[in-house]
Image 1: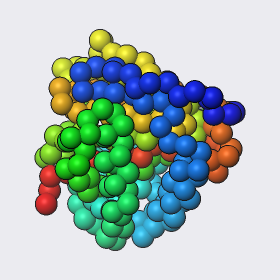
Image 2: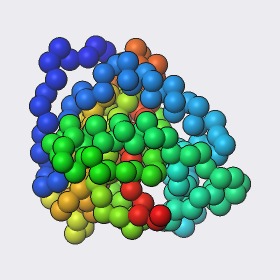
Image 3: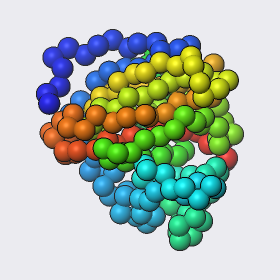
Length: 218
């Protein structure tokens, strides 16, 4: 699968929610794939989180800065082995500021200081149910980066898991930012498109999603 010759312009999906197709070039995607492989090895290894119901998520996750588990943050992976999570790298925060500016908010971008990243890996069977990102005290925007297989990203409304929602195809290199009135919108991934990854990124199958967030936890 080759990259498009012409990148599409940013698209406003909902107030405060912007999709920027092809924002990451192949070289930068490859750098992120290499970094994700290192983070997945530890100090806290990538794992499928267990929900309070006892069900394990089909998506596997590793965290930086703060460890997320349903539905809280801690500095240590208390639901795994108690190990302190890897620090959040400053260069990833800079990438988040670049992303926010690319989504059309250059003024607010300079003050954006994400302090955690959730790195999710989706194989061809993985899905993510409709949910809100509301475990953070801060309501600053969420920056989402996609690498690998294309997915169907369902972006809804802040009131319920049901309609209205918009299905967006997120391809490798795509950026999606949501904040403001869409910060607490329900969203999920009902499907991944196997075989759509660009092997030049270093990821021949599956999808990596990196979300940058400001926890507000100090």
